[in-house]
Image (tube, rainbow, N blue to C red):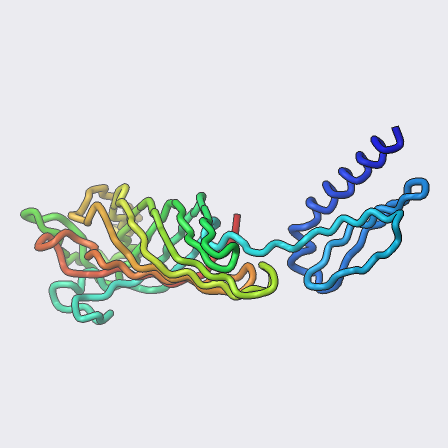
Length: 276
């Protein structure tokens, strides 16, 4: 009976430790110990970052909790700024491309990355990360053009309405695969770097315009494919320390299908806000 009660107390101590691990592993720099006495037995649960405790008492049961060795760096919510490069790798778009000029403030990317699987090659230090997520892109167009399809091509039609908002939006599903390395004593104090590629599938695209006509606010929305490439292949990089991550993506595939729109390549730079 005494052994059964002792086992239950040990299990309870471990459960309490796991519940607190998410907070303690980030903030604790010193050992934290939990002590429970039962008869002539002493149970010590030790949660430590890089130290150890030497206990020589025969009647002592020592249970050590090791800190997490790595965090998930893809699963979570990413917020980024969108941009477009032309075939000369310039953000200064040419005459046939200028209808896609944009305000960077207002051109956002929000990604909900709900799957992150790590395949270790050298334990937590080096491995492969694969994932899946949804991405919502918005380009805030700075010129008074309406994006439209004309004779199987996507063009910009000059418009004199004077838009309050002139948006081009896309929704995508992303499937990244990256080589990841973690360097440090534990996840909270580790430098991490991941580089690789990403395949994206375009779920839909649309335009939204807001303008004033005869004192009345007018909103128009048009949902079409606008000759956007259904598949996109991108380079991706993620870098950070602990739970902080910066990321960047650059598409190797043009935004529009070949000969059906200007040759523009999307890119995004941003930060991970939340990790799952």
